[in-house]
Amino acid sequence: MAISEKGKKRYELIVKTALKLFLKNGYEKTSLSDIVAISGGSLSSIYTFFENKEGLFKAIIEQEIDSLIKEIDEKIDLKISHGLEEFLTKFATIIFSIICTKKNISLGKIMMSEGSKNGGKLGRVFLDQILNKIDLVLINFFEKDEIKAKLNPKFTAKFAAKSFIQSVIGVYYYDSLMLNEEPQLSKKEREEHIALCVELFLNGIQK
Image (cartoon, rainbow, N blue to C red; front, side, top):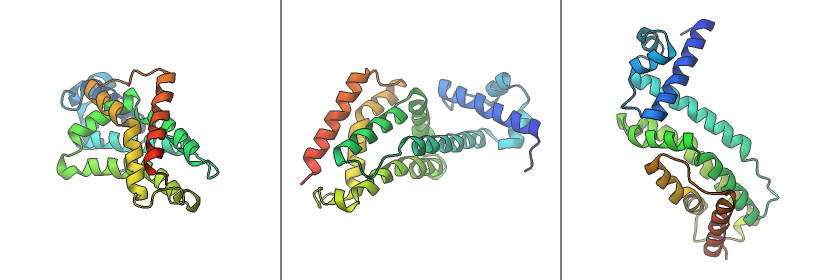
């Protein structure tokens, strides 16, 4: 569907407003009327662009996935020359800073409640394009010959990657989902947490 410049601005304003309300109030407690009351325009604009509330939510999630992928690609520019411990420390620091933000925690909370609907289509998109993409960064590193030679062969690269990521964000991320707030960690506490995760991981997976 061709959209005029005025239509594009209206579309973007609706999406921006809806995202703010979804993050603040949750999906169920946000109505299309609430969105229109702030963004202006009319309900007919939403029906024209998105068909319904579910279509609007899907468009927002797809936009946020694109934004998160871009952020991951920009920040995770890790060099092949990094040693195992250095790579893991840098990777963990970046992932924690991306995933454990107020916005992404709120988005994750919404995905937990809405992602399984309609056969889990939206949830699978989120898993495939975000979580699995993060896993691949580590998997590809672990499969490099010089790194692989240092690791216990009974652990697959995929298992090792998922285990490490869960240790880094797991406890703080899931606690934050329940409280809908960022982890309350100082810079020093975050660095200490990541250092412990790296040490624990290396003690368990290195030969």
